[in-house]
Length: 286
Image 1 (cartoon, rainbow, N blue to C red):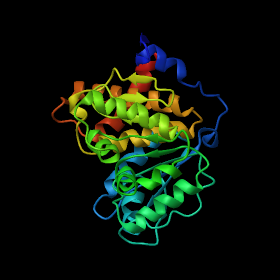
Image 2 (image 1 turned 180 degrees about the vertical axis):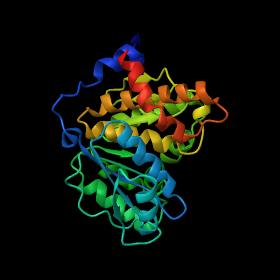
Image 3 (image 1 turned 90 degrees about the vertical axis):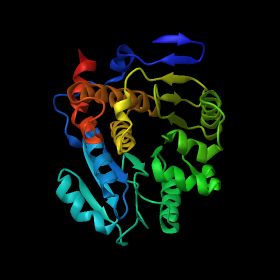
């Protein structure tokens, strides 16, 4: 770790120190049951990507809550996942009881309809644990900023620059955006993951951790959905929110680097990142 006042650069040695060793006699329930709430008509792929990444990150079990139109798709595309189909066909309207889940990730591809906004509100109000908020979850909050007040403490928000500007107003520079992210992390007592080149992880104590992995080939559809799944899966395994975020961001970038070496930056897709999560874990363990 290279120290620059309250700014840090994440490196392999630090990430390796966080990784839990698995007990020989462990079973799936030891590694948490995660819930991914995602998808809408035409965007069930976002739920599939998040769910696959979540289980690849090490979670023991996963349930996906998707609109009814996505039930068959999810069961076919990812048979390892359990599916909870919404009563509505094309969008998410009611997630139901969430108490039994070790971690929750939400937002990818779920749209911003009024019904989905109510469902997200209910999740945030119900949750007694940090929630991973990405994509349309953030877009809903940007349209209804009073929802900032109900985000559970230590939750993880993962906006790219455009999503972040919708949350806080347009920034004149990347430096101004970073300062806004640091301030928002303090204000919400949450973690802000400002995605992009050298993704910045902003903690509530104003410390910022920049990522040392990743490449421009990861600027592709679904890459953020994969990160949401990875971080949610790590939370389910009882990593603290800062640990889950730092490990997740680093592994996401490293898996992307491995994929780019095999396939080129130009041709890699989000599924290639998922396919290389295991290799990323092995490299960190070396």
